[in-house]
Structure formats: structure tokens, C-alpha cells
Image (tube, rainbow, N blue to C red):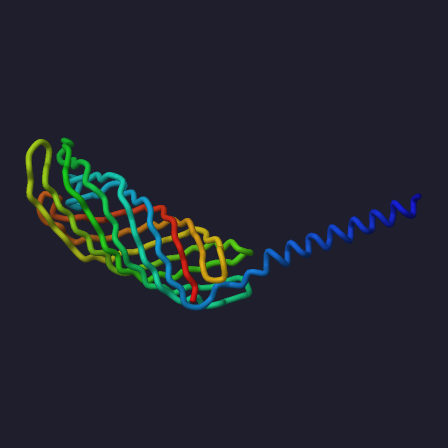
Length: 222
């Protein structure tokens, strides 16, 4: 009886080890996604506020929740068994409606929009764990910013301005491997753009335009 129990225990241990080994093999079966790829993402963009004037008496411009659409193309370099470094180019469009402007302690409604076209180079580090691939990255380049105002307070206003300025970006997220070619992802991007000058009633200067976006992405590997 004891011999049977010992054999059953040994079989259970062997079976458990075999099961864990199979799981580990399955988890690591997915290879690192190196090579050329393209990715498209779309989601929500939030701007916590735009400071105009660059001084204590400058204008505080608030925006509504907007959208961000992006397109990336790059190449993933395999660094280690589960690690890749991607070098990619990114562009797209960011759109937010204007909400209000605060100047000299008084706040009033503002009608208009602000859109941006970033042109960036990103470096993205990702770790492949089974079908999942968390990633972090940084980027930099230029950001085209355009603002249009058609009302301020209760009166109509016609004002517009645009500018090209330097921009930096940080990004993080995770991707899930649907197949050998396709991935689905969820990511966060922080984009800070510096605008030297935007004319009209927006204000003479914008120190920093901050963007926080959360997007869903689809990636295709060649």
C-alpha cells in the first residue's frame, strides 16, 4: 500500500514538473518580433492647459478632451533573447477644441480649436514574454501647432496662429501578439511641444503645450 502511494506521489511530481515545463515552453515559444514593422494608433488626448505669454500675467488657455491619431514605421533590432530596440519614425494628428481663456484673473469662454502634427523619431525598448510585450521609449523632433479662434466670451473673434517648434516624447505600454504578423496594443504617450509664437488672441507666446494620450494600436510585422 505504501509502495503504491509512493509511486503515485512520484508520478504526481513527474506529471507536475512536465506540466510546468510545457507551460514554460509555451510561454517562451513566441519569438522576439525583430525586423521591419508599421503601427497605427488612435485614442484620447488630454491637454492640462496651455500657458500663453510666458510671464505671470500671461493667458491660461484650457481645452476640451480631444483625439490623437498616429502612424509609426520602424525596425526592431534584436539585443537579447527576449529584448529588442526599435528605431521608428512617427507622425499623425492631434486635435483639441478650445474651452476657455483666463487673463488678468478673469475667465471667459473661448470658441475654437488647436491641432498639432508631430514629426518624431522614437527609440522603443520592448521585452517579449510569451505573447505579451511591455515596452518603454523616448522620442524627439518637431511639432506643428495651429490655433484658430472664432469666439471669445459672448462675441465673435477672428484670430489664428501657427508655429513649428521642438518636441520631446515619452511612451510606454504593452502589446499582445495575435499572430506571427499582427499585434494589438494599449499605450500611453506624453508629448511636450515648445511653441515660440502663436499670433491673434491666443497670446503672443506659448511656453509649453503638454499632451497626455491613451491609445489602442495595431502593429504589423513584415
